[in-house]
Image 1: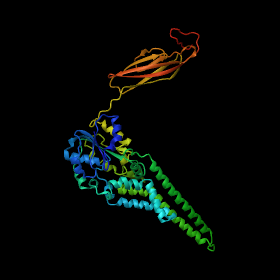
Image 2: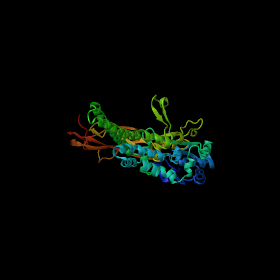
Image 3: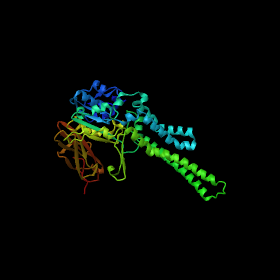
Image 4: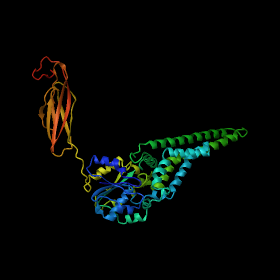
Length: 487
């Protein structure tokens, strides 16, 4: 298997996933390394990908693999699996490079700062807005080490990023004849984080956690909810004050010296409340809409197209790319019943190289006939089910379950009356019914049943211990040293 990383990453991005895959499947791992800043076509012509491999590629790596096949021939790979690849382009490549996202996030700062500015003053309010956004990762993580380092022009105009622009000459050439860029066994896994709200907050946490452990655990979401709840509480408080003063204004007469003070105070606090509501709406709605528009390029819909009249929905996406660009229709093959576009629910773009949903999809693909990666042979295993406590003279029933058998299974049951006794063969079926005997003078005997199973040259054993409660008896067999309880 060849593992290819994406933009700004290296082969270690796949370490977590490769380790989990190797515990279930047998393969030799080859790591494909390349400079992700270079033009995709030049990278694809020089990168070394061994022939006859199953290639697993994330994000930009999928474009490198497809262009490599376009140049070298589709027979070069046995199978290609892309994960979160911008096959039709990444709108973020346009909107981040031209500064639109930087302007949008500056607007977020102003929205979040509006309430504190109205309450505490301009300088403190803006500092508060910036501190809040930085604290929950929007600035430090999204416009810092993740987005800027990969895309923004402040870090240089990367040729690979230009290639990822929708409608670029590179993509037009690549997608002119998709079958010339894909082997017969082709699969596209697309992340879907849009089922849960605030994808931009979730992907921010993944960026904060880093490539070694990118799976977000809800810390940023929790902080985000506390934040917008605080804004709503502040807005509600100032609305209450405005209402109180307006009530005093309405119930006072014009001769009251405070009459117009009440009115001005009502307007003042209503204005402050409006600014806090502005920040609240930004946090719960407008920031996500901006992210969807300028980064993801997601479209919004309403009505029956969403499955419910009046319910709004948007394009499925992984927080960075829509499903349409991750898994375009040309991955399907005419007359083929195999599902070749597979969803990884709950995975954002930065989680896709480690997410359990992606792993599950890879397991499914590996078992398909056109990929057929051999599975790790698990050892023969047997387990006995039955009671752990019986009374002397009681008959007990035991069943068995066997897994990982390589063929037909043979069974041999054994019984031991107590820990000092020898094993006695008592049956050879899948189940056993056995009478147990207690020790003399009411003592408890520690009996056991053992099952030995054999299949395809392997043997497995399970021992099931049973405590046999005793009862006093005047007659017992000296030769067996155990006695059944008298009825």
